[in-house]
Image (cartoon, rainbow, N blue to C red; front, top):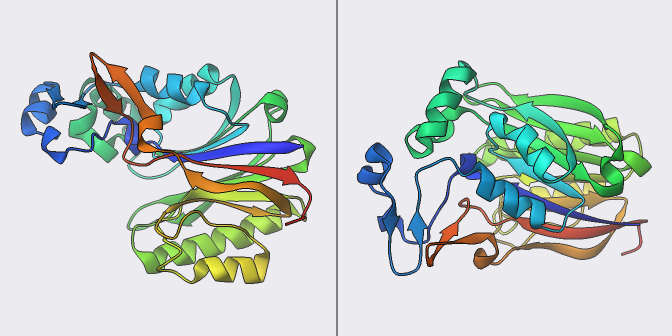
Length: 271
């Protein structure tokens, strides 16, 4: 049995054109769309665009970070998936923040609050998984891991680590240790936004040496899908930028400032 997985930081449901000049105060304050020759920047709720792109993609597992909590049910419904969620930071006064973010997502940005989400569909999504959550750090920002034990004994853990490398390494290391303990010897996928690059951090070598986790994405990537006790059929690789773009009035709307990372795994431990 093969499992297709993706991990994607949703940038709090916002778009991210390649031209930084399209991010203007006019757009942020007055919600005016900005355009250049190729791309558009839209300061409005983009739930339908993210949900449509995600639903159309190929995956059995989708690990999401910086996902607006109010989006989780809609994304799961669009993808015919079951969802698990762990709240991260800035989620107090959620009803007020959500209302403001619906109207002006760029102005509120990450202050709407966020969550880490696991979506499972197809054969994996036919039953609600056993779920656990781990708080990796409370201050200065709440960092969490969501963990699920799915059908066929597949375990999945998703986290978004801190932006400071030393903290991120500590969080990823702890997440790996706890996820392995919770998995109890079953196959495990550990993924998410690690905020760590393999060419700048030795933690990936440590994870493989101590725990058997393979294999990180490209040397400069911070988004990863690591597998333990699974064969790697297609190693993790980032989507092309164009793959997360949607046509909008003759121009491209690029979703998120992160490209999804995709991989394919097979039950068994052959290389």
